Image 1 (cartoon, rainbow, N blue to C red):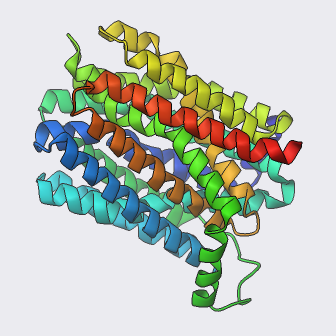
Image 2: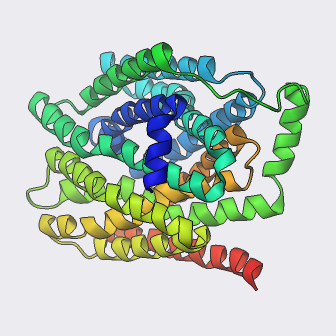
Length: 400
């Protein structure tokens, strides 16, 4: 891990991309914990309608990230593309902050959010392109360190935003914070950032390459593994939707607790991300992901039994341990399948994201039935177990 830190500090491209990712974390840390509260509590969406909205978000996010991911590998430098998507984020999130309605919420998260969200993958593509020469293990370790820096933004921001919106009594104000963070990211990368130079530029036309990219992603070996990871990550997406509602429906729970708990979990995630990076250098990556998935399954099962707020705080260590390693190693596993296409490889995350957000939406929709929030949490845990079994079946065969 020390080598990974040294690589980031000594390389200006890695350093600026890491700082930008840290600030990019402010945008999601200030809004993601409150999506379900805004949609369900403030705007009056039903569990079913909000679930369909989440599915639509995942679809538009996948399409946007995949297309931008492919074409970023076809351009000479990614910097312009990164700046464009950051500008989209500032505009979209700012629009909802100024006009908090169902329609601006839908437009922001179905149009501007998917485009701006691709900045995450593109910045990691810049990082992966810089670390390719170091080998996949060092690349995974660097990803873990960068992901831990990104997570650091979640330590303070959610709690402060929670206090801010509790004072103003307006959850949609969290989007104003996100818009300001996008502006900050834009300024940092415009002044100091750069994109990686594409060594494969000119080998094919962009659209011919796009057809080839579709063929690569649609291959059985890649698609099945993306599906396995997505099912495992269902535990993460289901928790992101259900946890704020669990908290606010418990005696004494409030939006402030939602933010404080998000910050607490983010703080606990950082050492676990670094631990995951260490293990990824000494243990086959799929085994690290499998172990993390099972830890998060145990957490989600426990969440279904909570009856008071202190129990959710007590479960935070399991939440952080499982989520941290899943988040930090998930992308490395996907990038390793396409090491020569960092943009496209990073965009596999969006396909996985579509699938696990879709299953997460399905889990949330089930909470509106007789099984309630607890049954939905257990349902999500069951889907994650299926993913663990699938990943074991696919990658265990390679070692026999």
